[in-house]
Image (cartoon, rainbow, N blue to C red):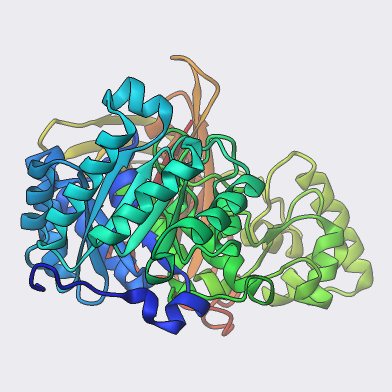
Length: 551
């Protein structure tokens, strides 16, 4: 740790000032404190390691004074990270500052992030302070923190609703006191890109010592403009953006890190700056956060949503088959997604169907393709996506919706707080015999799937399990979607019931029946055998399958 009075001058680094934007991630502080996104210490540490692998410059690990657990989480992260600056939030109060310093003691590079409201509304109703009192409080806090960490950031809470001349006065005093980063947050998501440009340009002209500090933007999404405002701030000279994975945060959230970073990357000639982010880690970071919080990402979410690199429209698919650039401005691999998906649904065309059938090892002539396409359209008009096993059934002249040979006759599942779950099933086969099996699992769904495996003799390595609520209230149905690995290939199944365990069992039976209808000699080569992707890991060897529950 540096001696009191000794501080960095990062703004003297021409690369930082002119060519690079620092990414300040606050997923574990601003994001985690939002309802539904709380994480325990173990989860926070896992996320922190992923964020360091992503390449964030600064990681705000928490608010140590908020609780003993938050203090412990910040301390653990501070001791674990090697390259990323670890930051702790603190009010301009001695107790907060000292607590933050103790939590950051083991950090290789530490930052205390001080904040104090500056807007007239906050000064009057939140703080009960005059302008002079706000100014004195900020200076005293920065001077105290300056001797306890490697660098200090000062945030003027509600800066965008603060009088510009007073904000410049506070920031000038903050620079003189030793702050090396000045943050002008849009705390309530009120501003517009034009207004934020005007403010940052004003601050860079009027803050005394502006050339020695980094200006930072922290935007909330209450009006849906957090990313646009952050990028506008960069255009006006901000060289740090404070953001979160998946845009999580208070109320409507913060600027989404993945959107800010990819906008700067894809539109590099326009912005003229870059970041240190390894963009191939964006999708893994998004998925890990989803796993840790249980909060699903909307399908249409930019960059990391399930539809971000998926195309169903026949016109779009035809263009994509001709040249990727027709409908994609970035490669999925650049954000850590394996490949673009041409979704086979009711809007798909012949060209995409032919291409997918060829990838599955089928090469129908024009007449056969016409017949397959007509049947494909009939099935797709029911409103669902058709997967590889459906297309193979069509290519082989079979009915993808054909039931059997297995059907569910009885199902019983139970779970116990603090213990394992158990389940028993009875299945009937088309040849007339019935099979009953029981199993124990981590939960009732896991136990049911294991019982079905035993009853049918079909081992399944579950790779994805998702439950969606269809409707509201006690009688709402659950729609289960399962993906599983069997015989070196992937299978999918769907099931619907008011009982989510039964819905999962029905989805598993769809998979088992599809496997039974496709003998090994008829199964298409797996993805890795075709050389079109990486093999999927067996979740039973490496952990629990990804689960999503959305309403």
